[in-house]
Amino acid sequence: MPSRRAWLLTAAGGWLAWRALRRRRAPFSFEGRTALVTGGSRGLGFALAQQLVAGGARVAICGRDEATLGRAHARLAGLGGDAVALRCDVTDPVDVGAAVEVVHDLFGPVDLLIANAGTIAVGPLDAMDRADFTSAMDANYYGVLNVVLAALGDLRRPPGGRIVVISSIGGRIPVPHLVPYSASKFAAAGLAGGLRAELAKDGVTVTAVFPGLMRTGSPRHATFKGHHRAEYAWFAVADSLPIVSMDAERAAGRILAACARGDAELVFPFAVRAAALAHAIAPELTAAALAAVNRLLPNSSGGPTRRWSGEESRSPAAPSLLTRAGDRAEARYNQVPRPAHNGAGAPA
Ligand SMILES: NC(=O)c1ccc[n+]([C@@H]2O[C@H](COP(=O)([O-])OP(=O)(O)OC[C@H]3O[C@@H](n4cnc5c(N)ncnc54)[C@H](OP(=O)(O)O)[C@@H]3O)[C@@H](O)[C@H]2O)c1
Image (cartoon, rainbow, N blue to C red; front, side, top):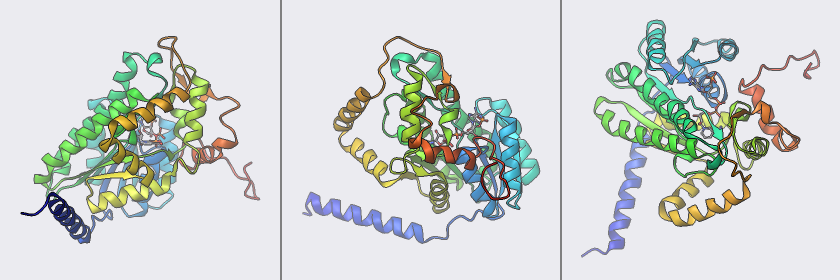
């Protein structure tokens, strides 16, 4: 009788061979496709939209802020492709339905949906209230569900489209001082897994993405509770340090490649994949490590506080030399208007 080890080796070999065979199939091409990127007006969504336009897709982006959408549209149109920017709040199913209809009428049925729009609230559990949990779920879970339901008719058309759900490493490992966010990202991950299983029969391929920190320039648009300046400082520094966070453009490239291959999941970079694996194997160990991290984070036991924006939470610690890379990402990924340049190429 084969030993347990032999069974395990055979199963692992079979899985690797099946994966290699699957990867040899021609990848999904973005050229001539209609893509809808929620939250494509800035940050990671904007980087994804730029790469899709460059790859020959017709790209619709959505977000809530008109000025940011206008800037994003001008930059996408400047790449020479077809792009449209729509004001739409993903938490509102009526708004989302109307936006998908406009995309359908302008560019034809949606072939690729990237559910990327999301919000982040940083602070200790003590400073959070129920509303923080419901608003995280509204944006990061129902915001995904609303757009999937609205576009499903298009995506199910033969031979079937693609859905990418942007969760987070926070949707694999519960992160202290990000509990409402983490819980909503776990929910989005569960939705993506269920959609993949049930929509396979219609030829729809779903990829769930679990990135670690990315330099998208987003801290100024996040909200902070408790000792908000200290919360902003650790978050902005972690989101900026090149060893801890990754370049958003590279991240976008990896996400589109995983989508084109039809991968079920993308957990990246490597250190984040290793942490997710450790959490799956030894949750007590990772929970103890996270409890230790929690003790290092700003303490707050004064009960729920108001939310402060990133803008209101700046201090000598951030922006600073340590946030330099993240600050540069702000203009690059349309978090702020790009500075005008004088003739010598230096900011005016
Ligand atoms: N940055 C990271 O380190 C990181 C790490 C892991 C996962 N992620 C995830 O990656 C995604 C993108 O992150 P990011 O850093 O690029 O964030 P970001 O720069 O703050 O961009 C978020 C985008 O979503 C839009 N948005 C937010 N709420 C919306 C709503 N209710 N309706 C429509 N659009 C909405 C924003 O536009 P408006 O505000 O104008 O609506 C913006 O376009 C998010 O889902 C985030 O959770 C980020």
